[in-house]
Length: 187
Image (cartoon, rainbow, N blue to C red; front, side, top):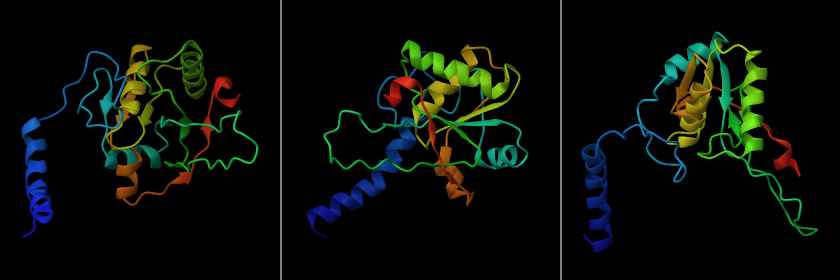
Protein backbone atom coordinates (compact mmCIF):
# COMPACT_ATOMS: atom_id res chain seq x y z
CA UNK A 1 0.00 0.00 0.00
CA UNK A 2 1.38 3.44 -0.98
CA UNK A 3 1.59 6.24 1.57
CA UNK A 4 -1.47 8.25 0.33
CA UNK A 5 -3.67 5.14 0.44
CA UNK A 6 -2.33 4.25 3.88
CA UNK A 7 -3.12 7.76 5.19
CA UNK A 8 -6.63 7.60 3.69
CA UNK A 9 -7.25 4.18 5.20
CA UNK A 10 -6.06 5.33 8.63
CA UNK A 11 -8.24 8.47 8.45
CA UNK A 12 -11.28 6.41 7.49
CA UNK A 13 -10.85 4.34 10.64
CA UNK A 14 -9.65 7.00 13.08
CA UNK A 15 -11.87 10.03 12.31
CA UNK A 16 -15.20 8.39 13.25
CA UNK A 17 -13.57 7.02 16.40
CA UNK A 18 -12.27 10.48 17.31
CA UNK A 19 -15.79 11.93 16.92
CA UNK A 20 -17.15 9.28 19.28
CA UNK A 21 -14.49 10.11 21.86
CA UNK A 22 -15.16 13.85 21.57
CA UNK A 23 -18.74 13.27 22.72
CA UNK A 24 -21.75 15.50 22.33
CA UNK A 25 -21.40 19.24 21.84
CA UNK A 26 -22.38 21.08 25.03
CA UNK A 27 -25.10 23.70 24.75
CA UNK A 28 -23.36 27.08 24.98
CA UNK A 29 -24.50 29.90 27.23
CA UNK A 30 -24.21 32.45 24.42
CA UNK A 31 -25.09 32.65 20.72
CA UNK A 32 -22.70 31.05 18.27
CA UNK A 33 -20.89 33.86 16.42
CA UNK A 34 -18.44 31.99 14.19
CA UNK A 35 -17.91 28.65 12.47
CA UNK A 36 -21.64 28.26 11.83
CA UNK A 37 -21.21 24.98 9.93
CA UNK A 38 -20.07 22.67 12.71
CA UNK A 39 -21.43 20.02 15.04
CA UNK A 40 -24.38 21.34 17.03
CA UNK A 41 -25.64 20.41 20.51
CA UNK A 42 -28.46 17.92 21.01
CA UNK A 43 -30.42 20.43 23.09
CA UNK A 44 -31.72 23.98 23.12
CA UNK A 45 -33.00 25.20 26.48
CA UNK A 46 -36.61 26.37 26.22
CA UNK A 47 -37.16 24.74 22.83
CA UNK A 48 -38.03 21.24 21.75
CA UNK A 49 -35.63 19.45 19.42
CA UNK A 50 -37.49 17.54 16.70
CA UNK A 51 -36.39 14.73 14.40
CA UNK A 52 -37.34 14.11 10.79
CA UNK A 53 -40.38 11.85 11.38
CA UNK A 54 -41.90 14.44 13.72
CA UNK A 55 -41.13 17.26 11.29
CA UNK A 56 -42.84 15.34 8.47
CA UNK A 57 -45.90 14.87 10.69
CA UNK A 58 -45.96 18.56 11.67
CA UNK A 59 -45.63 19.55 8.00
CA UNK A 60 -48.41 17.24 6.83
CA UNK A 61 -50.71 18.50 9.60
CA UNK A 62 -49.79 22.18 9.07
CA UNK A 63 -49.10 22.20 12.81
CA UNK A 64 -46.22 24.71 12.85
CA UNK A 65 -44.86 27.71 11.00
CA UNK A 66 -41.73 26.49 9.20
CA UNK A 67 -38.93 29.06 9.19
CA UNK A 68 -35.80 28.58 7.12
CA UNK A 69 -32.91 30.76 8.33
CA UNK A 70 -30.21 29.88 5.80
CA UNK A 71 -28.05 32.93 5.03
CA UNK A 72 -28.48 34.67 1.67
CA UNK A 73 -26.20 37.09 -0.14
CA UNK A 74 -28.06 39.32 -2.59
CA UNK A 75 -26.46 40.72 -5.72
CA UNK A 76 -24.26 43.67 -4.70
CA UNK A 77 -25.63 46.85 -6.29
CA UNK A 78 -22.14 48.20 -6.99
CA UNK A 79 -21.07 45.38 -9.32
CA UNK A 80 -19.54 46.69 -12.54
CA UNK A 81 -21.81 46.57 -15.60
CA UNK A 82 -21.62 43.22 -17.37
CA UNK A 83 -20.60 41.29 -14.25
CA UNK A 84 -22.30 37.94 -14.17
CA UNK A 85 -24.13 37.21 -10.92
CA UNK A 86 -25.89 33.96 -10.27
CA UNK A 87 -28.04 33.65 -7.16
CA UNK A 88 -27.65 30.40 -5.27
CA UNK A 89 -30.79 28.33 -5.54
CA UNK A 90 -32.30 27.35 -2.21
CA UNK A 91 -34.69 24.47 -2.08
CA UNK A 92 -36.52 24.39 1.24
CA UNK A 93 -39.34 22.56 2.91
CA UNK A 94 -42.53 23.49 1.00
CA UNK A 95 -44.56 26.21 2.66
CA UNK A 96 -41.62 27.53 4.66
CA UNK A 97 -40.85 31.19 5.11
CA UNK A 98 -37.21 31.96 4.40
CA UNK A 99 -36.08 34.62 6.87
CA UNK A 100 -32.58 34.96 5.49
CA UNK A 101 -29.72 35.94 7.78
CA UNK A 102 -31.62 36.00 11.09
CA UNK A 103 -29.51 33.18 12.51
CA UNK A 104 -26.27 35.05 12.97
CA UNK A 105 -24.98 35.30 16.53
CA UNK A 106 -25.13 39.09 16.46
CA UNK A 107 -27.94 40.97 14.70
CA UNK A 108 -27.89 44.69 14.00
CA UNK A 109 -30.96 46.74 14.97
CA UNK A 110 -32.53 46.53 11.53
CA UNK A 111 -32.10 42.76 11.25
CA UNK A 112 -33.45 42.20 14.75
CA UNK A 113 -36.47 44.40 13.99
CA UNK A 114 -37.01 42.48 10.72
CA UNK A 115 -36.89 39.16 12.58
CA UNK A 116 -39.23 40.29 15.37
CA UNK A 117 -41.73 41.86 12.97
CA UNK A 118 -41.88 38.73 10.82
CA UNK A 119 -42.36 36.44 13.82
CA UNK A 120 -45.22 38.67 14.96
CA UNK A 121 -46.74 38.58 11.47
CA UNK A 122 -46.30 34.80 11.05
CA UNK A 123 -47.94 34.10 14.41
CA UNK A 124 -50.59 36.84 14.19
CA UNK A 125 -49.12 38.11 17.45
CA UNK A 126 -49.62 34.82 19.31
CA UNK A 127 -46.65 33.61 21.30
CA UNK A 128 -48.40 30.23 21.57
CA UNK A 129 -48.15 29.31 17.88
CA UNK A 130 -45.59 26.60 17.08
CA UNK A 131 -42.50 27.88 15.25
CA UNK A 132 -40.14 25.37 13.64
CA UNK A 133 -36.65 26.66 12.82
CA UNK A 134 -34.30 24.92 10.42
CA UNK A 135 -31.37 25.48 8.09
CA UNK A 136 -29.04 22.67 7.06
CA UNK A 137 -27.47 19.86 9.01
CA UNK A 138 -24.67 21.03 11.32
CA UNK A 139 -25.81 24.64 11.07
CA UNK A 140 -25.79 26.93 14.09
CA UNK A 141 -27.99 29.50 12.31
CA UNK A 142 -31.17 27.62 13.17
CA UNK A 143 -30.00 27.07 16.76
CA UNK A 144 -29.34 30.82 17.18
CA UNK A 145 -32.68 31.83 15.61
CA UNK A 146 -34.67 29.35 17.70
CA UNK A 147 -32.88 30.54 20.84
CA UNK A 148 -33.85 34.14 20.07
CA UNK A 149 -37.49 33.13 19.64
CA UNK A 150 -37.37 31.44 23.06
CA UNK A 151 -35.83 34.56 24.62
CA UNK A 152 -38.54 36.71 23.02
CA UNK A 153 -41.19 34.68 24.80
CA UNK A 154 -42.44 32.27 22.13
CA UNK A 155 -43.77 29.22 23.93
CA UNK A 156 -43.66 26.51 21.24
CA UNK A 157 -40.24 26.80 19.65
CA UNK A 158 -39.14 23.73 17.72
CA UNK A 159 -35.60 23.26 16.45
CA UNK A 160 -34.87 20.86 13.59
CA UNK A 161 -31.08 20.41 13.61
CA UNK A 162 -31.03 18.12 10.55
CA UNK A 163 -32.60 20.81 8.36
CA UNK A 164 -33.09 20.30 4.66
CA UNK A 165 -30.36 17.65 4.62
CA UNK A 166 -32.38 15.41 6.93
CA UNK A 167 -35.60 16.30 5.13
CA UNK A 168 -34.33 15.36 1.66
CA UNK A 169 -32.52 12.25 2.97
CA UNK A 170 -35.98 11.06 4.08
CA UNK A 171 -37.27 11.49 0.53
CA UNK A 172 -39.45 14.50 1.35
CA UNK A 173 -40.29 17.14 -1.27
CA UNK A 174 -38.62 20.52 -1.58
CA UNK A 175 -39.48 23.70 -3.42
CA UNK A 176 -37.48 26.65 -4.63
CA UNK A 177 -37.39 29.29 -1.92
CA UNK A 178 -37.28 33.07 -2.17
CA UNK A 179 -35.85 34.89 0.85
CA UNK A 180 -37.65 37.63 2.68
CA UNK A 181 -35.13 40.35 3.28
CA UNK A 182 -35.03 43.57 5.22
CA UNK A 183 -34.64 46.73 3.16
CA UNK A 184 -30.92 46.94 4.00
CA UNK A 185 -30.23 43.78 1.95
CA UNK A 186 -32.20 45.02 -1.08
CA UNK A 187 -30.22 48.23 -1.60
